Image 1 (tube, rainbow, N blue to C red):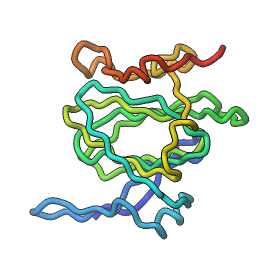
Image 2: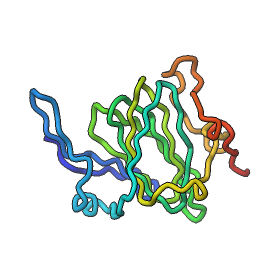
Image 3: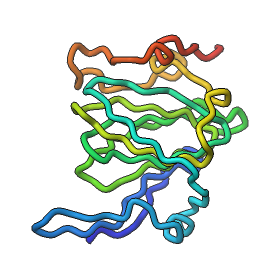
Length: 180
């Protein structure tokens, strides 16, 4: 049985949460959310919306930022390289990023605080990604950043996908570069 813990990334209040899981010969069961335990970790939000995406290997979703919205994300099937970028102009870690691999092999979740851009690269075919949002999604509030912005220098593991080029939505392909 794994304990319910969190690792602080040192980038805002972002955290990698290891959920409590129970495993035996039949498989495993894990708590995907337990409000008192999350509050004890400093993650105190209501979550009015859950969303699930299914992605082919090589799909890159993001980078997206709603300045007021927090996210709690996890991989239910497959694996991703997940990236979050501090976009809070008054933060000492402004424009710094962190990346972490999330997969269904570990019952981990990533807490992305408000003011962070977020995106992921699907590393396996049929990756199922689950989001909890602290606000209902509103496209009018969302900002997009180019996944390959040279000002960020994100080290995406493109060598792990066929052809080395991600599959993007038209919206993500047209996202703006940061002003220099």
